[in-house]
Length: 230
Ligand SMILES: O=C[C@H](O)COP(=O)(O)O
Image 1 (cartoon, helix red, strand yellow):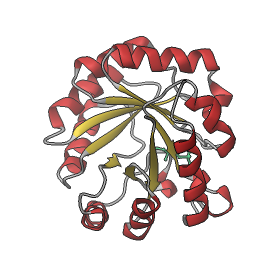
Image 2 (cartoon, protein in one colour):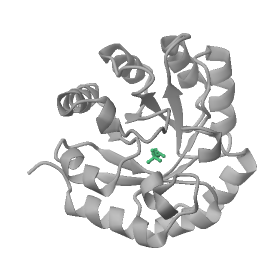
Image 3 (cartoon, helix red, strand yellow):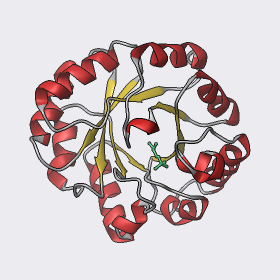
Image 4 (cartoon, protein in one colour):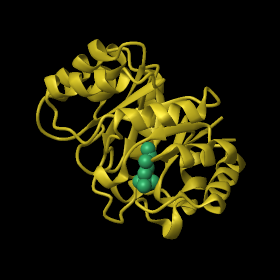
């Protein structure tokens, strides 16, 4: 079964996504970048609103690959009580050391790594490093949010390889990155664990706008209608 992840920015949107039937509530600030972090008090307010009805993740921010910075951000985010902390992987710095640092700083939260596929390739090394460090999942997303989607950056074969590699390593495999309704059937056919959305759920399809209940419902209906390979 493919789960639908909705990225939300505040308690009102979190409630909207839960009521619409999103499977995972992902807290982030799209005004601060692809994986922009929300302030801790806002994360806590969202958690109070979701109130255990769905698992909640939160992003740590678009940060350089520095282990000290990563550890601090992971620890600060985990301290809010979110179920899952999401850390991004970009080019440069020391991603392997950051993955290890995140594992030591995660507290009671689980970890999901997000490889920003337009900024760095999803190499087998990264996936294995996350599995070795005890991450529960790995997602692909896009970092630039320049109108191109994940499918503009990676071929179907590359996406299928990524999903297979993550699964073989024991990780859930998520796909996101300016996905639209038309992307759901071809991506669902690859059998990911999660499909993630923000822009497609918002007014005018713009990720910094407020969420549109009709769009959320439409995306959820489509994901439910395409529950993976037959
Ligand atoms: O985790 C999923 C992302 O928030 C996707 O955002 P996007 O659909 O606007 O690229």
